[in-house]
Image (cartoon, rainbow over all chains, first blue to last red):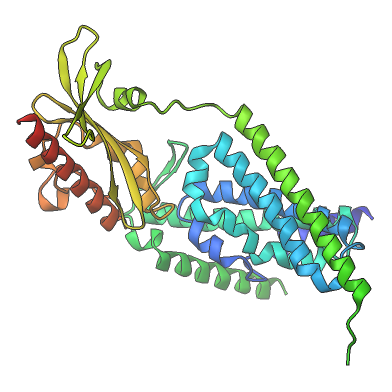
Length: 201
Length: 183
């Protein structure tokens, strides 16, 4: 049991990574990965929403009529997204402003709906919670990794909450903080992970 | 052919209704909780203008014939005239940008603050960063140019349209106030 619990959590980070293996949630991954600060906030928000939504959907799974299962999933997900948004707007208004439209867009982030459909609606609450937490963590790692590369490459430094964490002496490439830079980094990372996977096998 | 299953339909409607009710209730309760606990920000004219006009304590609105506020005259605690304050809105790339700012008696900027904006998150929204707004301090309307055109203001990478809109809006507002106040 302990081993399968660990697997439910770990598979979102290594094995079935939502961004690099399943290619889900790319819209927010590319859009919010301009700055590390915003990527971290987005990652944490997604972890909270995914694990909470997964747990509730798993608890409700026997009461949900099949014909309306998608609307029910969306109501649950949208509720948690709204709660997180209200919380950020009240207590961390600057983060709320920086995330802008991408925060409410978590409702239609396909990672969340896909995990509800593929996992939470078929497994018990503990398993669903671990799956959500793992997938959320995997997403957070992915988006922060892309943001670290893009912010460093695009601006020559990493600034979080006004503190400069890293400064490298390169000529910043403007394109990295623009949309094409997101696709470029995403493509390079996908190639790298595909290569590593093949090497391990 | 599949027949219409009344029991299933009723159950679907019931489940969705109950769930939506619960969801709405939860959101309202949580919203009220956050509203009553979050740090309150006072947004009076005085509070806004004090931040861009250091040393000023009193602000008197100057009206036009239609009783619209043209600008604010700023006075120190001792009643000496310090300059002019303004709060206005202009268009950015995607929507409204709201500014506050102050001018000294020579119509040079004492400070500029972006109060509200709806620009691209992570790109245009960076005009809210303090270093960008600091650059305007001490400049006259004629000096509001980007460094790439020989001026004193550094733009932001990838944010040309928004930056140009900000600089242009502030320049127009400064010229307007100087016109009314006789500069």
